[in-house]
Image (cartoon, rainbow, N blue to C red; front, top):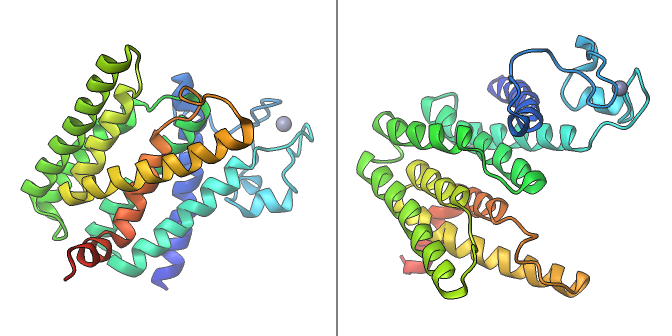
Length: 251
Ligand SMILES: [Zn+2]
């Protein structure tokens, strides 16, 4: 029964995340007006607005104009459902579940917006930092001091990297958005996870960056945003961080 709630709740949140992804970069309201087709502007009927299911029934096309609906919608909904379900199986219906699911949802929105627009909106990362710090006071998985050190280390380390890069190469290598994102990750997951996230995201970024460069054969310093790699590193740290750290320390 709990799993059903986690799936339905995850689907509803996923649907809302899609609204945030489409509207936040345009600085539009996320509550008004209701969902409408981005192509023809027609309001979406309530029975066509069921996460994932409607996309499949409509075969990915708007009922009114027949033009295709972005695959982003069902993909974001499916990932959010999966995140909700996995966190539920670990934490049950608890404050910890809500805490980590809010974190996961923020990472989903940030990743997709960064991929499309190469920006990480402050309206997600800054409140995220506050939720992470305050949440650590009430949930048992992370101590407040760990959250504070994670926040300082996350914000501070990338700040040092970004400033040195700029000083050495006379150009901007990493945006302020990445710094605030890693500060948010630190506030939610603590300082050890920050180090793990930096290692994992650099590794993922190098492997995928080199792969893309080999295929496309050009300088991609400006083309690949770093936010999605930080988010992926943070999700791995959330899912397997304890195990990876214990393994590394040989415990
Ligand atoms: Zn349409």
